[in-house]
Image (cartoon, rainbow, N blue to C red; front, side, top):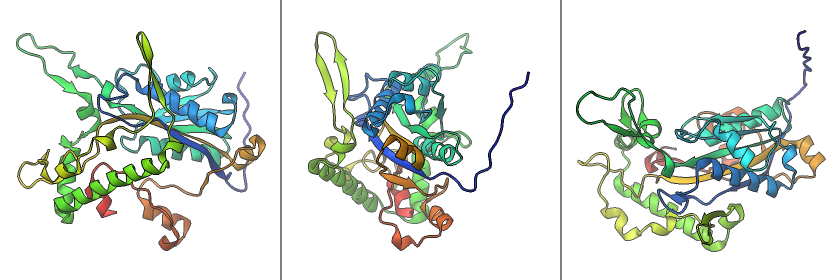
Length: 324
């Protein structure tokens, strides 16, 4: 006997709102969160988002989480994360890999699912633990001589698979083609870290962070509640650092490139009707999204750029932000 399905045409798409948004602290590479797997960080973020939304876990119909470096995490990382957050066994889970845009793409896909009426309450976000990414070696070991091991952070996360180019070299080419100087990049990096410091000191960032408790053998748990990286920067040393990828006239350094980090973030999204039913307060409404850049979104929804209050910029290298 075949399963019978019926489809109902809709005059318009559902309105989609975000009702909560949280994240863990961002730990430095092999730093404060190194002992916590990506799936555990994801669990903490998912649970924190649901708690902040003030809804029961049973209300969440599906979860999408971005996760790039999945080697060694075990099967279905997002399913591990949602079960660790206390969601039901029947909750569907999907892990998304779009490299740096994985978390954002999971939110876009969740919004589309809600707009189309496939679900009415979803969680979306991203999780990563670069500190726990393994080294690997080819299964075909040589009969004589040594075995080469590869770092999967570099191989699966930071190298163009087609031209065997590291992202840092791509950034160097972009800087040269766009005539972006080392001084401009350093200044931008210092400004970014300075804004992070100011945001912490004003208490703004504390509102979005869910602390991570790390069990200790025979000792009280260690609680991590702040981003780690911004405290490690010495601004006086930024202009003196050597270029990492191109020794001659290079501009990319450890300071003006993004760092390797551990952390997770999650949002609760739902239709406007579900928000009314659950008495959840919307933080924002999703109007449109794009897979290209901010300006293409503006064209899609036919608004003037001057009306946009804020352009959040998140990129791996300073020179790409200058291009925007």
